[in-house]
Amino acid sequence: MPELEWRIDDRPVDYPEAVAAMEARVAEIRAGTARELVWLLEHPPLYTAGTSARDADLLEPERFPVYRRGRGGQFTYHGPGQRVAYVMLDLKTRGRDVRRFVRDLEDWLIATLARFNVTGERREGRVGIWVDRGAGREDKIAAIGVRIRRWVSYHGVALNVEPDLTHFEGIVPCGIEGHGVTSLVDLGLPVAMADADAALRAAFEEVFEIPTGLEVSA
Image 1 (tube, rainbow, N blue to C red):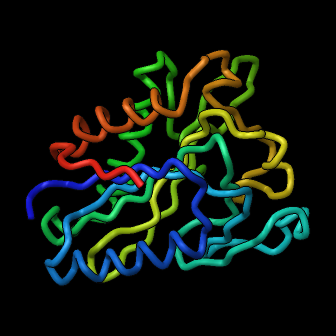
Image 2: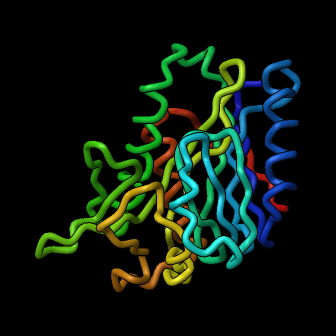
């Protein structure tokens, strides 16, 4: 099954529903009965905790539902206006190189932002993609948190298109204090979700060198 499948949901997907669907798809990819998948969606407002999450970084535990999952990373916010991209790839066919896979995810986000003339950057010791706002200020615009099961990846990345940035105040995002959070719209760019999706697809093909293949809208 050489073609990569893209799925785009036009409704918010509950987090437990998404995790169950990912786990089922990962098993099918491993069994060779389903194509690799990139799933673009939004979630209702919620916080997720990765394997490195610290309880002290959950500042407002009653604000939104909190889900503790086995992905890498710490606390992350998901909600409307944020494009979540769950990436389910068979890494056995891609060199079994987890470090390279994570770097490719970073490159994917950087290349996506470049299509809107935004310079996204890595920072040593800080997970995600960052934007230099000048005067010593750096804000996070995208998060990364992945899990690998028998060499098939799932979970993925989250790009801030136009979320309510005050929703991030209930956590210390990814355990990193002293920095803010931004979005494409916060940077003054009137980017619609469809524009972000088109940029994500084009940049993915460029970085991963995988044809974008089939699209299924849900």
